[in-house]
Length: 91
Image 1: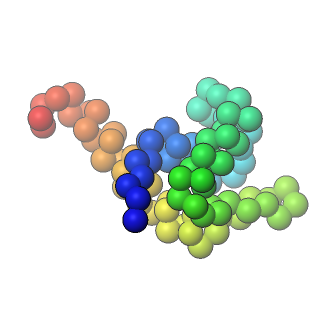
Image 2 (image 1 turned 90 degrees about the vertical axis):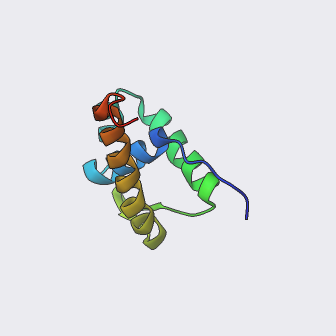
């Protein structure tokens, strides 16, 4: 098994796409373009060798693998936020 590092910006984009229900809305919320968000989702899927989101017409569907990742991604992002909020106090 190869070691894979998942950048928090990819996880944040993934969670934002899920929470807001679309790439364009996620792009607006994150101050990026829709193509940039699409590329981030592609990169995350490539890193994990998994399909995370599918499209049914104009509707996004999170796959089973995507749902599993979302649980962990939310935890990672929450820990990241706690560390940043600690402002070095916990170090």
